[in-house]
Length: 539
Image (tube, rainbow, N blue to C red; front, side, top):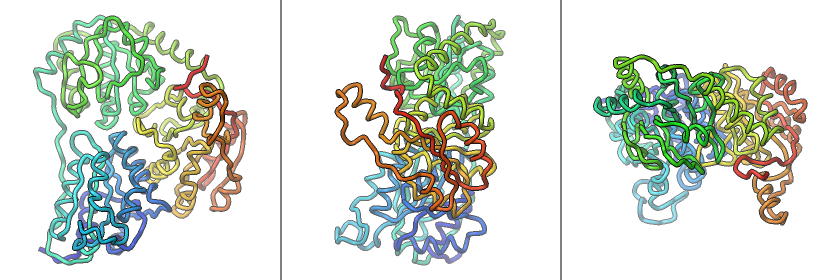
């Protein structure tokens, strides 16, 4: 076995697993790992951020547009805590992110001496937001631990993992081998479950489909479209699965978000519902005769959790849909076209959204018309981001990113940086509010330093808008803690060496075209009034 340091074992195993980018912030406990990354910089690009939260947000953005694990690296204690919001977001979105966290020296573990950055039982703080986490204290354990982390990221439901390495273990030398990367088979469905599901769908008069984020993760676009066409079933999506079918296709009837969505009209009129890769959490759903439910998910704990399932299939979405389609084709012909009816669902939902939020839908439509079909839109926790969930037409998988149920204020800009670092040839736009953008304006430095040319559209209403809307309509306009004092955003961008621009909604399209054409990171400020969010609808 070759002799190497723990840090070299860590970096060489990452390289063996196909890692080409690490998002990191240095500190004393991790300097041996940084030195090993210096040796490997021809193969692994290091992107150093200005705050630890950006390491995991960027790793998440990288992972979601590529489907490959994104890797972040931070010091223990405050560094690890700061990275927690990004890791929690990745957990909510079922995103494969590896956080490599430092530790105090191994001889001081558990002694509560007050070592620099010490957190007793640091592993425990990550357990609720990771699929697996582990600490290594010997050089010889490192390759196997990294390989095991990758196995968890690449099998079943991909959620984040965390690996801790003390500084003395990184600095020590040992004899160990680097492990070759491994290909993991997809989880196949049980044939009897597929047969039961096919029978229900064959007998259905009015089937419908809900596709969740699991269909994006498994790359099931082709199978989903063919099955929907065979069944002539309207397809509803979640925020996480926008783009799994082109949303201008007649079978794609829209996205369920908050209490809005086609589900409230489609599900009560359906007799069989096929749910694929989704938690099936639909707010305010009321139906006297619920449809018979077929639920497919890689995570067995999700099946039947929110709605009772008649048939549960634990399997990869792509594999299960392909098997179901084969079974249906073997037993009969495609169902008669329902195109007119399905387009009716789509039209009525679009009209409802337009009637509720004409200003917001105009802005979202302008953004859609200006971007390329393969552009990546990161929908932030802000008014236009909320309405984008239901009004933006995503046309390809992995082009629409949200913070899922975590609702992470401030995640959009650094996540977009990670997406652009992974896909530099694509347009990448972050939809930010003035409140959320100010969580990480310092990452303009990262964008300029590494030439990560994201366009951040900052919608400025000088408020935490949803909270101020709440105070306006539920708390008698008793305003406290929701107004904002903002910088000059154009000057702020220019101070970092980025491009700063300012416009209003009427001038958004030409301004966005100029921003996309600029060979630089761009902050595009759009001044807007406070507007109604979709989860606080006031007649």
